Length: 378
Image 1 (spheres, rainbow, N blue to C red):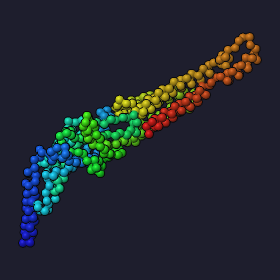
Image 2: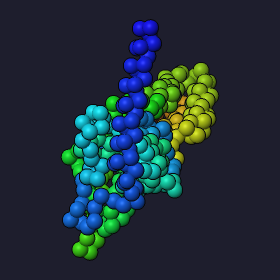
Image 3: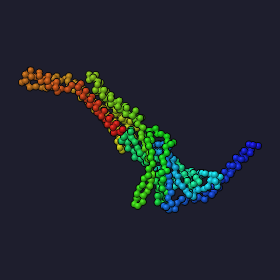
Image 4: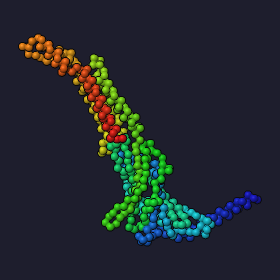
């Protein structure tokens, strides 16, 4: 008997509560014309606050110059026609309907969206409070224009902006309230390639004639994660450049200098061909690409320098000293001997000495190119 009585009490309470909510909808929402805005002229302009809750960075396209984001958009405004006294409706202090039954600011648009669906016109839930505050919530998979400069790749940093504005600024009289607009990253999920560095909300005005147009810009500052590029591309390139230097350490008599330098040069060429597919495509050439090409040229130059060293070395063995500096037949034997031992020792460069000079030159060039690349990008 007690169980039956308890169930009846709950049912009566639910019916009463549902009756109050039904009465609220009949008195307030059903009488509301969703086609009519809560203002008549510019003097009745209402404040509208925006909040973007960023969920994730889906993709940054260097070739398409776009950024793809997933986010929630919250729009909050006050409609004085949708007010009620909670005590008159059983203490109900909130209600939820859809944008089909209440007015929403459908002229709010994302100006740099590249897809057709630029404005927030979808039918979505709208929450209401007794004081008339209305909150419209919608989700968006957005692809917006963003200038991507990959000159600093793989240490590049980009500032991508969502341009939000009123499409009919001279008809829909609401003003964006920057004081209560925000960028929320509480539920943000990191991207595997990009780090979210910072977000910002700012107000921008565009003047056309005697009229100024207001926009709210939501800045998303992202930075590429360089670890993968450094380990899979830069580190092997540095190792190959070090191997280039060891070509000059090999003894000339070993007969492996040309073979080793050619093998390293071909390795450079094949490796750069492979990583070319993973490099971002853009009309701007990254400093990283310039560094890679420089290392390929140094490797090719090493082959040429080693050829010179080997040529000079074997010329030394073929040509005796008296053939290097031929003297006049009238000179005495003593004069010939002095000139041979003095001038030849002074001006003649051996293959081994030339090898050391070229090695120092290549080491300096490698270090200079690496330091220049890091100085320009870091």
